[in-house]
Amino acid sequence: MKRCFFFTILFLIALSVTAQDKKIRFGVSSSFDYNFYGTVTDYPWADYQGKVNFSAGFVFKYQLNERLFFLTKALYSTKNYKLKENENSLFYVPPGSSTPVPVDPGPPMDNPNPVFRNSFVDIPLEIGWSLFNKKNFGIAGVFGFVNSFQVAHKNESFYIDSPVEEKTYNNYLLSTKMGVGFMFKTDKIGFHIEPQARLYVTNVHPKMDENPIHLGIEMQILKL
Image (cartoon, rainbow, N blue to C red; front, top):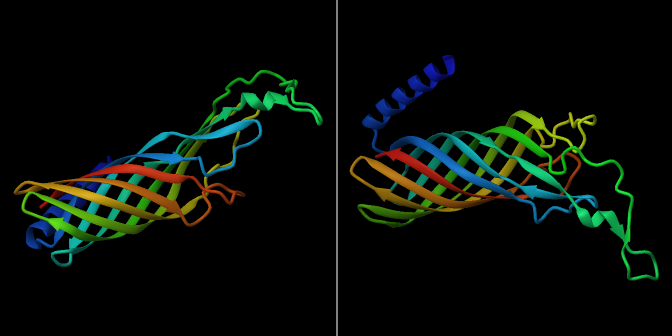
């Protein structure tokens, strides 16, 4: 209840400020995201696989002039992924032979596709440039940095009796973000749709140099 009250007060203050200064815009934002793990080396016995994630929160926009604008957001986001048992790891090719030989797989796995769930608060800082702007429609390029702070995690495991307790994502992530936004406008409301990609600057996983690529599509509703 305290959180709802705080965000309600914040919303009313922002609306009041927006009414006084047309350069300031306030709204809500959400996105569907996917962490692409094709750039990460898999384990011999399991493959990394991304999952569809989401974010939701508030967005603040400051229109400096007709073309240049700045944005910041406060978002709750998920960054989940999973591991999938690699059946090819159950075979190996002996030296001097071309015939795969089965390997003892050991005890059967309780869960061959464990999911690793990670929750973050994202604080993006972005700059945008209007490429096309008419009364009812606009296009803009956006670039920025995203600060991500982990707030919760929950891991599954291949084996029930061997839980994964440690964090699989680092506590703080920094990424660069690039996108192209399409704004559909009415007299009072703007609907913004933005395909985007993020490249991580810091390591995502502890003790791992390779990072996934963050792909997504963001939707905003702004009060004009």
